[in-house]
Image (cartoon, rainbow, N blue to C red):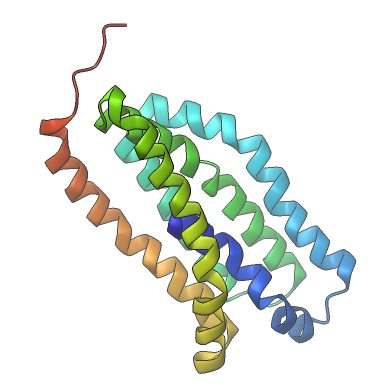
Amino acid sequence: TAINYLDRQTLSVLAPAICAEFHLSDTQYGLILSAFSITYAVSAPLAGMLTDRVGLNLGIGMAVGLWSCAGIATGFTRGLGGLVGCRAALGVAEAGGIPGAGKAIHQYLKPGERAVGNAVNQAGVSLGAMLAPAVATWLWIQFGWRHAFVVTGLLGLAWIPVWNWTARRGSANAPPKSPP
């Protein structure tokens, strides 16, 4: 969840540089934000259904992989159309983050541990949003704004094998599933 929000907030941190480079108006920047919000809202229920259908590990792996690639692609955009497309793809993919986290909490934690699991997940939201200004600004100053999107996207891609390894180790300790 922290990586989800780090990716999500990077655009707002870097908006001054991006708007200046592409000569974007406030209306055009609003279109970019709307592309994310609309696709996120429409995709959230579908992402939850997909994760239920294909399973947690594949569902969250696909979501993180796609949102990471959308973030990386943002670093290679050349104008308004590319930014709108990348943010729309990010919205579709990030819509799987919260349902995936909820499913992981339910799947790996006992009922008496789930409130704390949800609290830690929500702390991850705040952590990602809190780190985005410092991380994105530092990357922008050191390497240019494009690198901030590439690096945050690579963080997500690096997380996938760590999750898969952890999930395999944790499955032996997962609470038994209740009958349907």
